Amino acid sequence: MRNPTRPSISLPCAAALAVSGLFALAPADAAAAGKTVRVHVQAPVDFHNPMATRLEGIEQYGHALFYQDFEIPYDQLETLINTKLDELVPNKIGDTIVCTDPCPDVTYSIRIKPTFKFTKKNQPVVTKIGPSGDARVKVELSAQAKVSVHADVHAETWFDSVDVPVDVFVVLGVKASVEVGLWPKIDPKPVSLEFTIDDKNIDLELNGKAVGLGMKWGTIIGLSPVGLLVGGPILGPILAILGDEAADYAEAKVSQIFYDRTEKLFAAATRGLEDMVNDYIEPYVKQVNDIKDALLNKPIKGVNKTVGQLLGQLGASLELHTVTPDGGFAASALVRMTGAPAGGKIYGSVRMPKKVCEYAKVSGGPLKGATLPLGLVDANQDLQTKVGQPCTAVLGADGIGRQVYLGANPRTVLGATAQSLPSWKSSGSLTWKGNLVAEADWYACKFELGGLPNAAVVELETGGAVAERHVAVKERFFEITAAGKSLVFDAGLSPEPVEGGNGQVIFGGAGKCGGGGGGKGQRRTSSRS
Image (cartoon, rainbow, N blue to C red; front, side):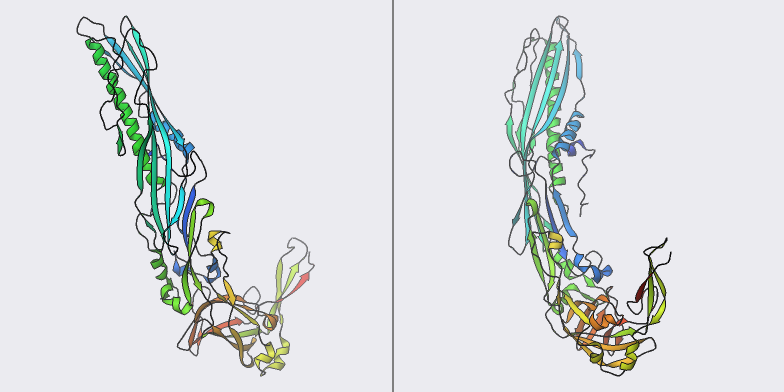
């Protein structure tokens, strides 16, 4: 893939810079902003680094896999092109032709000044093509530029002189188009490029009247769609006052110089057009890139399965969403899950600490606003009398909120005009298992979450009586259930401990100061100063 940074406009090659950007579609002479084309993949896996996937940020996964801004910086290019064309012609060319017969010598000089000017500064038109299940666009550009060559010719003998200004111009139309497939494959087609001659001054006339010394002027502007200046001269002598040998030779030399320089200027402009179409219009991707296949083959860390292998268990499908922001085109392929209840389960236990850390918030002095641990204090002392009672009686009917992940919202990457889809929905049921038990540092109750999808990202959050017992937790897990057994992976997709063939989620634990342990501690305000 080519570097997705816009090509530098300070390229050293004059041909590549001469006339870069003579294209783009839009209303005639419009100079509207360029159009962007991009494609995203929103999946619950880090597309570029699957092993770094973390569940805390899965809603945000979806960086553009293809992004190109089809904008032509006309004003910058016009200045640059003129500079580069000037480098192709010296300030002044001249010589003296010595006459061997009884005739005067002829001294001649020629100054050539090229000028490049965009006459139509259009920007691209981006159009979606093909069936709705594909993301395929056509980018079309059309513009126009005038390339002028002015020459000041001077010739003199010992008894007379003449100055002849001559102007030649062509107006070139440029049309370029390219089709780019974005889904299921990033598949650019070859760029189509066409030149037209929209105007020219083939009937050249001198802009002044020669007195005493004339010169023949021969030049060509033979033009074709495949190149410039490939034909022969189309003008005969335009002025002939002196007919001696030296004058004839001077005429031939001046004609050759003007022809040669004009040919080089027009040819450089044409090559520059082709180069800059390739730089600004050709997609950066040089080969077909099957992003759908790449997505389905992304491994899920810890699970040892690919996204494609898990689609069935996840109840997932691929959806394509497209928008046309500001005349551009954006697409996102999403992995969306139904979240339908099935045989998925998560087992675990809640550990309610016997001690929690007491904190003080400093209200004055240099540490104002700081929270300082004071030490462990007793907590949940009333549970001692409830040991052996059913956990349902101790903690009530609920206490652990459950949501399953449905997939990213296309609006996250496509903007406000895209369809808004929910990313989470409530799911499953909570069952407290057995009776309250007492351990050295906590009281514990086991639980079972049932009715979950057979595979799902699940967000669990303690609340109600569980949170009141100093177990405040909000975490995400990946669960996969098969053959009656459930495996659970943490937010970094590392496996949770297994007991009885099932993964176990542990909430809470021993109270600690300084982080970790048994959940939320007690706080009080200190007036230390």
